[in-house]
Structures are given as structure tokens and as C-alpha cells.
Image 1 (cartoon, rainbow, N blue to C red):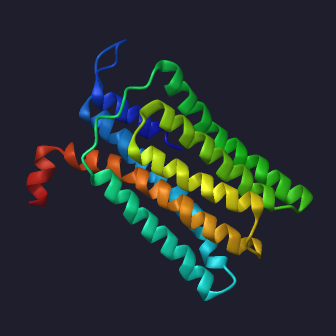
Image 2 (tube, one colour):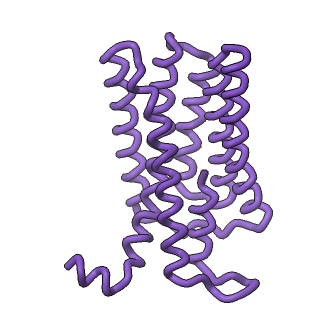
Image 3 (cartoon, rainbow, N blue to C red):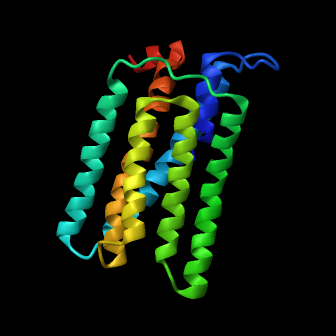
Length: 206
């Protein structure tokens, strides 16, 4: 999910050791694509809220999303030390766990349609997200990574223990939590995209 973001982030720190540095246009194209991808994931995690069994559960899920996103936003705005540069192996693990999210979605859908058991879908998906966030934390060590991983682990625990029923209510609450994390990861590339806006475009807007 965040593979493109991490590539873009690393490229803005230093040139490619194997060749010339990418142009601003290439970086902006990568950032735009990543923002679209993360936006799709955020919308997907928020979708179960519309199927919650009551207005109360809808409001709880929305409140979780808004409050947790606001807290995460405050963390990203706080003065932070530069994120550490990942090793080649760590960057590879980030990319691998990103692809595993797609595998988890496919596996969950197969189990759901074949066995008519949809509980594993949420567990597999959020579990793969937790694993991906763990590799991001190990690779970059940012405060936002600690925050996001903590939230996703909580969401994963909710899905495993299943303290909420029916299933759509459980997914709504867990989805609100995870969506706050994916929305948070949109902030940095969006800021970078704004900061690298071509001068002509800035003058046109002004």
C-alpha cells in the first residue's frame, strides 16, 4: 500500500546511487499516484460504516476516525527528527508486505465466497496491514509509524476477539481505526506535492 510513498520519500532525500536523480516531474507523478492509492484504501476501510446496524455505531466509527486522524495529524505536525534511511533489505520488506495486502484481500474473498465465512476476510486484511506497518516502523522509525502500528494492532485485536456483533458493526469500528492511519499517510506526500509545485502553477493559482 505504501510502497510508492516510500520510494518517493527516499528519492527526495538523495539521488539514486545507481544513476541520475529523478526529476521533480517524476517525483510528483509518483506522489500523485500514491495519494490516489491511499485514498482508495481509506474509502474502502470507511465503507463498512454505511452498513452498521444503528446510527449509534455509525457515529462511534466516524468519531474514532476523526479523533484518531486529528491526533495523528498533530503528531506529524510536531517538530520531528529526520526519519532514518532504510537499508535495501528493509525497503524490500516494505515492498513485499505491501504486496501481501493484495494477497490477503484475494484470500479473504475466496474464503468468504467459497465457505460463506467472512470473519477471516477482516482478520487477514488488517493483519496484513499491521505487518506492513511494522516493516514501515522498522525501516523509518517515525513517530507516525509508531502511532499507526499501535492503532492497527488494536483494530486487529478487535477483529480477532470479535467483541462486537453483528460483523458489519465490528468492521465499521475497526475500519474507522485503520482508515485514520491510511488517511494519515496521505498527509506527507500531499505536503511534498504542494512544496514541489512548479513555479508557473503557483503563479497561476495566486
